[in-house]
Image (cartoon, rainbow, N blue to C red; front, side):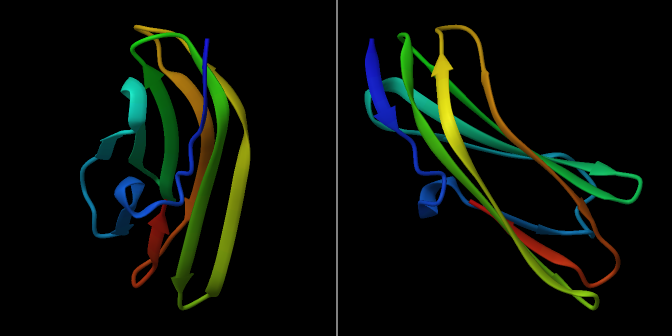
Length: 111
């Protein structure tokens, strides 16, 4: 089994947005050895849900780091998640989920 350390904090894995985003945003980036990471941004009634996944062409285990920064009229916040994961071919491994309350002028950056 391959072992990897996925750093979602690397620039290729970044997704940025604001409440003005009307559609679900997805960012998929391939990592070495056939491992891919995806961050999905789904609009919700009061904000946005950010979800990150890993997938692989062969069984793989490792660790990840998911960082979300938010700023707006109400101030700013940083959310930092990380941990171990296992991914199997043909299946996405859920890594982390962040729900953000946003209003006009709120911006977020997930990596």
